[in-house]
Length: 155
Image 1 (cartoon, rainbow, N blue to C red):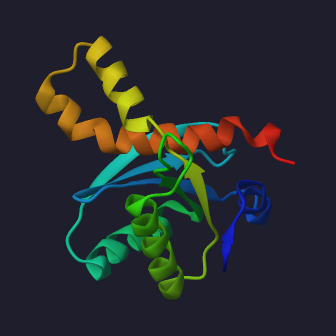
Image 2: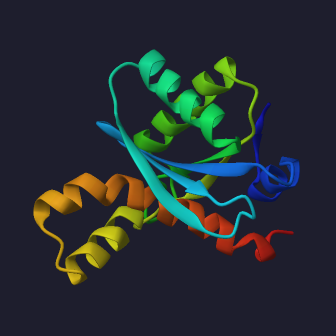
């Protein structure tokens, strides 16, 4: 299935399917799940990246076990709106994943998601160790929640 616009992704899902949000980093992949009503995003897990094949295997196991019908990948657009090398890396990951599984994928602008989550964790007085443990999956939830909250703005 091709890469879809967020509205098309939501329209392609059956009533009981969830979305899986991904925050792709060079060392980890943060995961977040929506509820079946696709209203709330919850931090789920963090995958330590190794090789694409192993990463995809772990990711698709979550997809199968959790009833996921589509993926939302954070797209790290530069502050000036241009797409740099990190965006190309995310797009390549999505293309490779699409070859393994016919599943709808959408991108969501993730500008400042990790910064926002880190700021929230600092305000909550989380330790450095705790922040390191949860920041990626919380950033994935921030990305996914952004899409869920903006669905009324999709034309």
